[in-house]
Amino acid sequence: MLSIQHVKKQYNRTQALKGVSLHIPIGICFGLVGPNGAGKTTLMKILANVIQDFEGNIQYEKVNQKYGYVPQEICVELTLTALDNLYFFGKLYGLKGKA
Image (cartoon, rainbow, N blue to C red; front, side, top):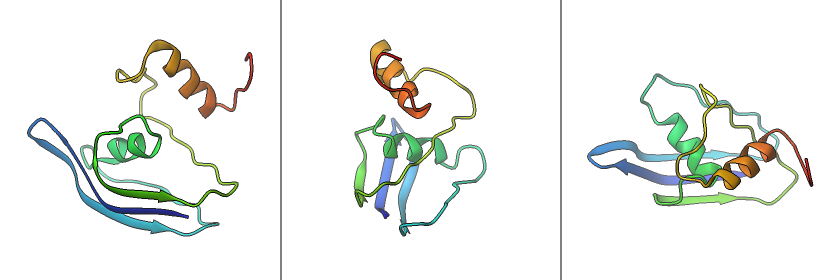
């Protein structure tokens, strides 16, 4: 289960997310689509814990769920160190241990 309640994120004067709320029950496959600039990437980065400074509440139910994050363009996350980028993208591709 994923519950997103009143999530807001602002970059300087640009409001990227304006109080997003949704509930995704266990066992549901969900896609996030919308036009450029709608805040999809910002929301996914919040869910992936890349962005940590936001308003609102996110709750996960800890079960064997997986979620995918496929950015429009493959790039490094500027808010992470080089090593953290390797771990982040390695985890997305299912790498473990020395791999």
